[in-house]
Length: 147
Image (cartoon, rainbow, N blue to C red; front, side):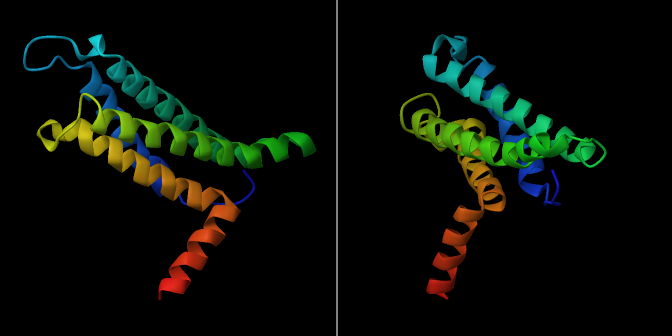
């Protein structure tokens, strides 16, 4: 991408992605695989999709300054992080709602998966605010109005 951006939210999203993958694939205390639950399959998908998207953006960010994308390619390289940010917010919002209100992380006794869902939502929103100018303006206006 043409402009430098903080990689903090992206690196931060690696943690809840990996934790969610582990939490949804580990057997529960009754020896039953959590992958028997459709919700856990969704959680596993969110973790994997997030991880792939994050690693792709980090690689693009690292190598993007050395590649010649051409005019149309550069527009795509500038738009891709916004698209990924939007998709990540949608995935993590659905994961936080479904996995913490329905099954399997309905309380904090299953703390790893529970907190991974909410941390993933928060960090994906931070990344979206960083990448999407319109969203950043809304957040800036809201924080300025409350100050």
